Amino acid sequence: MEYIINFTWDSEANVWVATSDDVPGLVLESGSFDALLERTRITVPELLSLNSCENHPISLIFTSERHEKMVL
Image (cartoon, rainbow, N blue to C red; front, side):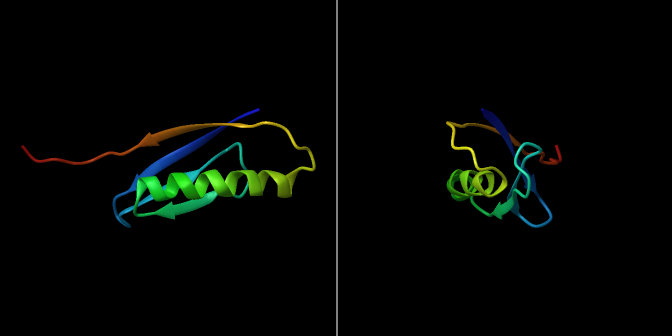
């Protein structure tokens, strides 16, 4: 089963935020993209096991989005 994880940059808080429509309860944040990626890899299987009794292979698809305003 595939789960899409969205990483979005929150410029006001200066953190990356991980959310997913596919994983109920997933909301994580970190100032480091790599740290958030690692935390997400650990947390998603835990959340899925809390919401389901089935053990099956999973695939995580990570998307990231960051918008920056620049002055020329």
